[in-house]
Structure formats: C-alpha cells, structure tokens
Length: 228
Image (cartoon, rainbow, N blue to C red):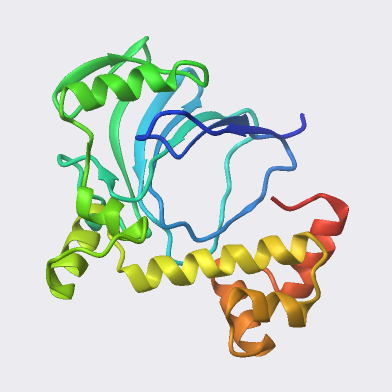
C-alpha cells in the first residue's frame, strides 16, 4: 500500500488548512517545525483518537502503522481552544476523546465526526459555542498593525494564544521560506540572503533544526518533487 496525503486551504478565517491521508508501508516522514496547532482525527482498527497537536519548535520523525488514516484541521495563529490551552502543548499532544462510533466528546459537548469536505461546518459549530476563539491582538500584530499596549502584554497574549513568542514564530517561518526557495531551485547563497540569514552556515543550522534536512538535501528533494 502506498501512502496518501492531500491538503487544501479554506475560506474560513478560523481555518489555516485541512488535510487527510493514509499511511502505507513507505510512510516515514519528517514533520517540520510548525507555529500552528492542529486538531487530528486518527483512525486505526475501527477507533478514532481525537487529539490536539501543539506547535512544534523542531523537526521530528513521524511513524504510523500501515493502514492508519487521518483527518486534520490546522488553525491560524491566534485562534485557540480556551479549554485546551495550546501554551501547555508545545512539542506535545493531548488526546481529547477516544471513540468507536459516529460522534465524539470535545470539552463537554458532543459532535459528529467531521471530514475533509465539511470541516468548515464543524469549526463554525465550535466558534458559535465559544469553544474556539481568536485573539484580536495577536491577529493585528501578525497583520502588521501596531497596538497601543506594552510589548510585555503583546508577548503574554502571543504565549497564551499560540504557545510561542513572536520571535520563535518568525524563526520557524523564515526556515520555511528558505526551504521553499531551495525547492524552487534558488541557490544556497541566494536563499540564505533572501530569507534573511547572516550566512549559509546559519541557514544550514536553522533548516536542520526546523525542517529536518540540510539545504542541499532540500534542494535535491525539491528538484525531484519529493518535498512539500
């Protein structure tokens, strides 16, 4: 069995991306660092784990048994579940529910299992029940709109809503930018310059930590269409 993975964007302001897939015998990816958290529905042997996966500050290898299928929702920065604080899940995950039927419990409410096509409806329910909220300060700062509050307050709001500082978010996003440039065939020197690294060794250290590969390896995978 070959592995399968598919993802899409969303028109919902509360959704960053939606994705699903199935693990084959060849499934052994490296999951890159991510400043976003995810709600993951992992199905195996007829049962489903509903899990909150926190932000990742480093690349980690992933392993799933062949035949395991999943559906996931990635949420934008600043959007969070007050009952499951993302600040407590940095490089961690928490199982919220374990079910073998068509519905599951999420922070005291009962829901039908969503799927790849109706994720927006499910998330809309969470928003209407105030189970999922968004921090306007975090959203405004990320959009480049200065706030008339102290930097300490901004930092506290970022940590509460995302589990990360603005600096760490920027480091992760810069590594992703560099990886994308390398995948597109940009030279190592130009990728380091365009992504804002001091030099190539600085970029190499960052990519190995956040993406899990060296720049040369990323460039090779990108040229073969095996990364991204």
